[in-house]
Amino acid sequence: MDFLIRTLALLFLVNSIFSQELDRIAVIVNDGVVLESDIQQKMSEFKKNATLNGQKIPSDDVLREDVLDDLIISELQLQLADKVGIKISDEELNVTVKRLAQQNNLDLEEFVKVVEERGDSYSELREQIRKSLKINRVQQGRIQNKIQITKEELDNFLNTEEAQNQLGPELRVKQILIRNNSSQNVQTVYGEVLSGLTNGINIDEFITEFSEDNGSGDLGWRKLPAFPELFASTLRGLKIGELSEPITSGAGKHLLFLEDKRGPTVTFEKQWEVRHILLIPNRIRPDEASEKLIEEIKERIEAGESFATLASEYSDDPGSKQEGGRLDWAGEGVYDDEFERQIKKSNLNEITEPFLSQFGWHILEVLGTRVEDKTNERIEDRAFSYLFNRKFEEELETDLQELRADAFIEIKELD
Image (cartoon, rainbow, N blue to C red; front, side):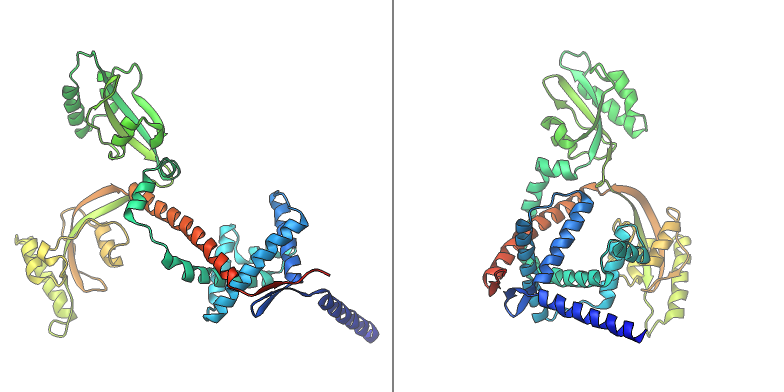
């Protein structure tokens, strides 16, 4: 048995020495190197992933050249990361790995199992992720401050057909058409429809009664570029449930009604309009005294005194006291957790019981609620990210070319 163990140990040692002899320096990159084993490993990984994803695998010569370029650029960026002291903690690495597992609908244990079943090393994968995070940190530091996107540039992009098709929602539009030779007066029809919609009458009733388009008046679901520009310019400014003023075309006068919109950028937010009085405890008026005073203020309001006047006199919130305690319209996530909880459970035009937030003692009154269409803001955010990423890639390509041009790189010829 001892002989067998010694024999196996010797075989492992010989294999280790043999594999080291097979490896060699393929490229010198400044003070670092790229090994032949690195190139072969990356080529093998590419072929494996390409096979799994059904991708075409280029020739070994073409693949080797691409892999070599990637490894040189990675080595240069890792050298920069070490130079400026960038380090990735185990905690940050663990969070990234867990996020990667979640993106594949796996928990960490399942993720590790899948990696190893593919014949890959989980520990090597962690090291690759660590290197990728360091490289990403280098790129962010070198590129991010070079990118500027002006309001004019953003607006110009939003007005392109590319942006409207990629980011814009689909609109459900209905119309009432009054033809050129009609006996109906379009302004009279417009006034009647507008009044009826305000009183809750369905647009379809008015289409049936007034429209002369020989149809249902339903223009269907379309993105903005699919509408005639005559319509699109008006629809850009309409909110859901709004009726356009008459639009003149060769066919007659059109009243457009935006019934709905859909798509990944469509976002609605419930908002509240609130007024409050805040008392912040201090040395002169400690917590108990502040609580007692806010209770007295509430009783005075209920007895008929003006909320606004008392807010101006007593509130410690400098941003709202001069407005009678009134705050701007706001949605979820803006206020302190307890303040928001009190808003959500309150009835309109009722004063809450005194409550304590992280800022102090409050009473508040909800003055109104509304559902605000935030789709345009969401589209702007997505458009900004799109432009930023596009500029980032352009700047990064230039930066990497300069980084390589300034480096000492010696590619060793194959024997």
